[in-house]
Amino acid sequence: MKSVLIIGAGPAGIEAAITLKKAGYNITLLEKENETNTNLRNKKLLFPDFSEAEILVDAIDSQLLDNGFVPQFNTEIVHLEFNEPCLIATDSNQKRYTADAVLVATGYRAFDATRKEEYGYGIYNGVITSLELEEMFKKNSIKNTFGEDPKKICFLQCVGSRDEKSGNNYCSKICCITAVKQAIELKKLSPETEVYIFYMDLRMWGQGYEELYREAQEKYGVYFIRGRISEAAETFDGKVQIKSEDTLMGLPLKMTPDILVLMVGMEPSEGTTLLANKCNCEEEYGFFKTLNPIVEDQKTSRKGVFVAGSCKRPMSIPDVLADARAAAVEIDNYLKIKK
Image 1: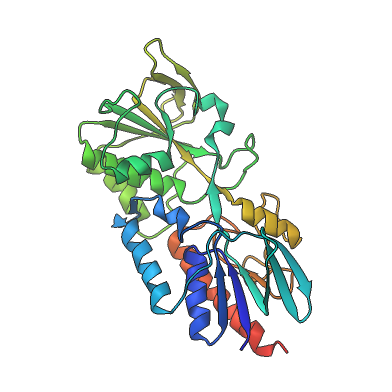
Image 2 (image 1 turned 90 degrees about the vertical axis):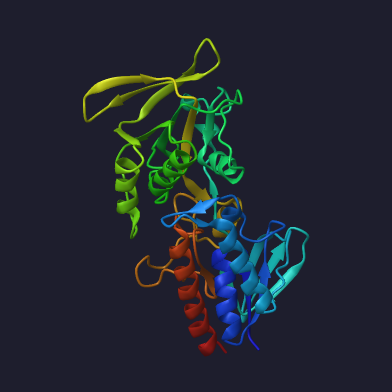
């Protein structure tokens, strides 16, 4: 029986593992962390239907159990060797794994907001990231750093994305709709709170996203301001003050929100960049480079090495799952003709 080594037990790795096992292959599933779906577990609700992220995690994990999978946790692959006819992977403890094909599904990490010093993250009270706001949602309690119910909350889009200064010129794809989703969540929890979203332009990529954007304005009264925040500073009473411009009105703006939420973009995880470099398949931002983003998007220039999910670019969860199934098909085709 031919074998496939899958690196990463997130939605992409798990979906591909189940698909390939049903096709009759011997699967080894490795995960760097001590649990599955780490980037999904830190969410409360998912766009565009506000379904519970925890329910999706449980459903994915149940599929693992139903198919007899026990991922090997706390296992970080740090090296890949290409010794025909097999591939050999080595983990951080120098344990070696041999396989006929390898699928890399190492995912992404959130942009480190401290790299944007002008917004004061980690410096001023009241500046948080979108992931930290998700943690508040999970506790069903939104408070500022003084333990008060916020009366005014501002979101800033494109922190670490579409930004030459940070080195990331690409769009992270999910930030716009995430801000809309979070703004609606805030209004549901606290209808009296004023919510503002500062944006360059809004990119509503998926079905139902544009409708959610309109609902945020028409039903929940979320304010959308076209313009970037130029800087954040601390006020005399320890709050954060922001300066911006409404580029549609041509007017300067100054606000003192109780919370400033930085919508952090997606970057390749450390494991993604490490393995992409080892395979000589690293593109300019550290994601995996595929043979062709249109017709060979699961293949790499390394024979027998395939990729799926957000290890190659920012993706939404539905895109990740579809991409994982496509990768499984490519691996199946490859192994059927492999001697």
